[in-house]
Image (cartoon, rainbow, N blue to C red; front, side, top):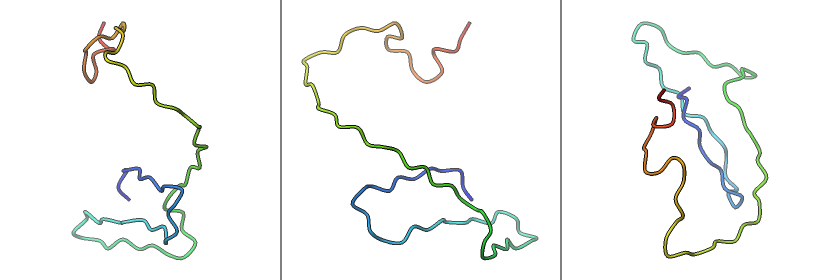
Length: 72
């Protein structure tokens, strides 16, 4: 299974599937009924209201990109 989380929105009513990719050219992957191959996490969706502003306030991170908060 690819470690790529997906999102199922509250209005979806179809079948939930898992896409499997076998990267081993020598051996086939066998998945049997009852095998545990995926996880489902159910998260409550909070009620939120957008607050539109002309400009965001500053922060301690500033404009630092990915990984910028982990440097010593």
